[in-house]
Image (cartoon, rainbow, N blue to C red):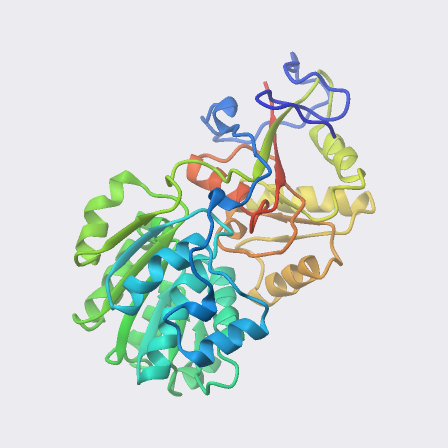
Length: 400
């Protein structure tokens, strides 16, 4: 599929500015259609090193504990990313911090490495809140990979799992607790878990967790935490309307904006796919997936019903695909995600539940089967590709 800079582009042989003039043979439009202007979504990628950032130190020369340096070296990590380098001294000093950096920039390690340092130096329990189950699982997995042999223990508590198992898990001491707010609050209200030992609070993807849907649970958790604690807020986007709430959580914070919090990843080439008259969107999607370079693709739809519908149509066409959304059990979602990560699936169709924090290497393309309702959702969707300095491609279908 050819692309042209600064011009919206369709599929092979499709003029970029050709708009469909009728709906014959087309699928019906979803209700509550996005009001975003498709052309506002475009932001051409450039093949360059991430933010042109040149590290000024190596991990070996940093203030990290020798044991952490050894573990990082074993994993092949030699230099910190920009957010990791610029936040390290402040976090090791116990400062509160607001960190804005695009997806794939190493935010998770940016807060986990200083937490590990303080845990090696003495008893230090940390709590990480995440908006989605997948992100919580990913954070806990990375923590375990970074502390091998250090005898540090972690627990993850998320919805959709067995409560009795969580109650048993909560009775054991943990150096790191990673959780979604609803399940964590449930355990706290059952007196199965205590926050008395928490010395560091991390709210990952805080813009989502400060939304109204999470605000009540989050406030109850914050009220139950010790007043003397370090507070860290990380996200790829920054909602100016949340500044008052941010100021209430953070105490004289260091503010790091590695990215503006408003633009999409510079390493993602973004294109619009305008449907021609009479074209059926699902058929255009099938043709795109038949191209050899579409080898690991995440497809986003706005509703669970549309996700299932797209997945069913692709499977009927012999395409290896699966779906994840809120109606699927956590076990199902984890199996589907694992199959996608290991290359058993070509396509993963998802609602925005997958746009927050799912870290899959080498996603070749993101396809917005439907335009998201907000720019923040678009930014997090598109951020699933073009990670760690690599270039990715995102397509968005546009219907007249």
